[in-house]
Image 1 (cartoon, rainbow, N blue to C red):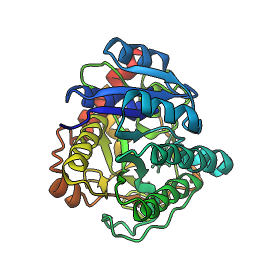
Image 2: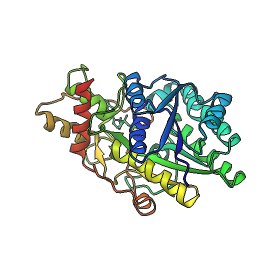
Image 3: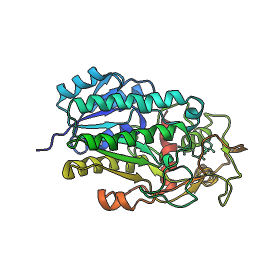
Length: 331
Ligand code: UDP
């Protein structure tokens, strides 16, 4: 019988909370550890009402994590806790190396001490850096361009080494492309008020919650001069985690996967899509480049589709932006 007890770090956050909903649909029993530094109280209360247990704490508290794993009889861990803003990582690298690398390593140590079998880690497509406008595969060269990406890649490397030393331990890594949108039933969504991500910020501007919207860099070597990203709906990303956990339960092996749609959109395309949804101009201002931004990152997603059987259901920029906008209206 498969042990369905799961520990989720960062479960009050955006990606963690959507993944928890997808795991609950598959009858997993979930305990969350979250220090609530960026997590949402509203999200936490909602998930608690569904039977998810929240423990206030940081993943670096080794003894605490070990006792949770023992007490809840946990075999599978999903690690979402971390910092995610490229620009901030350039300005404050120590925060990123501490939260995303050091703390994750301590968390991993606690997991290994307690013989965790499966460790799922949130990585990022930004580890690929500039990819010459070519879709990246999991074996493409990695070239992080900022401390955020570097801190994630360092954990990936640590996991690969840990696997060699601990044969019964397995990791599963998802390299996320640009996640956006919200749960279609409006149960959870992206909360952070001081968001920096393009779709979130644009919907805030559309709803007059912000005075300005900037396009960072219009002189990139792309068809319209702005950066290209592969935007993926949060619910498809959440489902990819469930597929990955099931795959690890079945195959007992470690693996890593790109999680993107394989379609690239420029910053200007995203903004004009939202403008046509709301029927008015967002008056976006053309500004200088932002530090640390690669020109273009688009996934080759053949591996996740073939090996995890991942079937995106919301692969549509209009749908992604509309769901982000609908969620933003509720805040
Ligand atoms: N971007 C922008 N204006 C904003 C936020 C983002 O022009 O207010 C651009 C950013 O420079 C990048 C792309 O949108 O080229 C995606 O950035 P985001 O912060 O959403 O995600 P990232 O790819 O950095 O993780």
